[in-house]
Length: 189
Image (cartoon, rainbow, N blue to C red; front, top):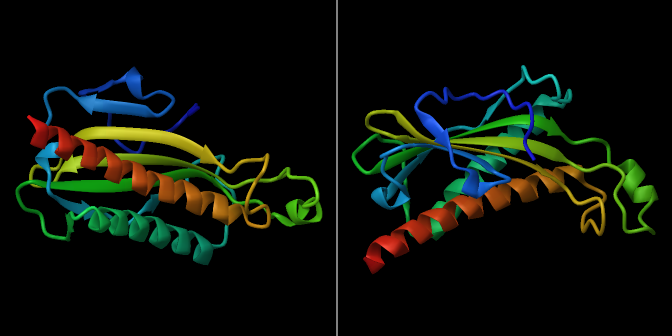
């Protein structure tokens, strides 16, 4: 559940759609949905360093995670047969990701506790995804979700970064599946 999130986006004109709970999804009424887009721009991933819950992390590690997330999303879209580029043109959706609440505590205690399938510390991250019509830069959708690794039966207890990478992969796959579903529904009509 996302609580006390400081939004990077201005939510003016967007309405919360509770049907996506526990993910917070705000939608601009009357705006085109994913089926209107066949081309995507994926911006570099931003990090909210003003977030008081953000841990002090190595800048090189943060940069690696930003690149990993962006590359994962781009690859997922391309695997779905979508064009990903950098030019703004009609039928292009701009996707911007903002990270906050990023925590990757030392997993050493998990390794010493590896006999018991329970992780003492897990990676955590809150992702805010903004979807904009690229030509006008109109904000149509904002989605926010908090992810954390599993404390019980954690497949990678030695790495809290693996928890965060898994969250990024799930976001990339989820976005692609939502776009696929929208395109499939358009074709069926």
